[in-house]
Image 1: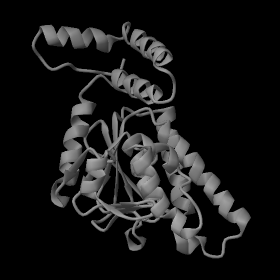
Image 2 (image 1 turned 90 degrees about the vertical axis):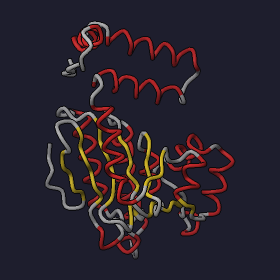
Image 3 (image 1 turned 90 degrees about the horizontal axis):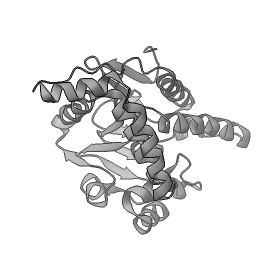
Image 4 (image 1 turned 180 degrees about the horizontal axis):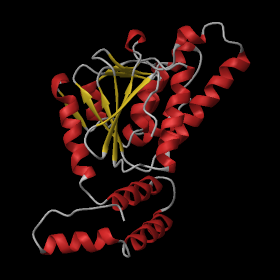
Length: 264
C-alpha cells in the first residue's frame, strides 16, 4: 500500500488499523484537487487489497480542523469545465470511500465544513472532539452539497433536520451533532484519538470477513426493501459458514480463549 502521499498522512496503528489524516493544516485541511486524487487512489487500493487492514480511522492534522471542505482559493477563477473536472475527481473519491470494504471511523478533531462534513457523513460512524464544529455551507456559496451530503445526512439526522442544516448553512456544535445522530460520541480533544482507537481495536479483533460482510448488509438495509435486504444478509451469512474463522470463533468460545482470526 502506498503511503507517500502529499496531502494525506497514512500510517499503521498496530497490525490492522490504518490512520488516514488530512494533512494540509495551513489551510484547515481544505481539499484541493490533489487531495481528491489521493483520497480516490487510497480507497480504491483498499477495495482491491485491504493488506490486512481491518479498520480505517479518518482524521485531520492539528486541533483546528478536520477539513474545511473544498479549497476555495484553488477554485477561484476556475472555468466551468475546470470546476466540473475537479468535481468529477471528488465524485469518484466519494464512491471509492463508500465502497471501502473495511469500516471507516471518522475522528472529527475540529471544524468539519462542506466537503469535510460530507466526509464525516460518509464514514461508517464518527466520534467528535468537543471543539468540533459542523456545517454544510454550500448554499451560502451558490452551490449545494455534492459529495453525498443530501443523501447521507437525512439517514443520520432525519429529513426535516437535514433540510434545516443544508438550507440554512448554519454551523452547529459537536454536542448538537451527537444529539441529532450525526456522531456517535463526543470526546475531550486530548482523548479523541485514544477513544477512537479503542473502538477500532475492538472491531479489528473480530473476524474480518464477518465485519466486512456485516458492514455491507447494514448499508444495503437502507437502500432496498426489508425482504430483499434479508436475502442479501442470508447470502452474506452463508458465505461465512465454510471459513476457517467461523470454526476458530466457535472453538475459541468453547475453549474459553480469545480467537485468533486470520480473515480466511
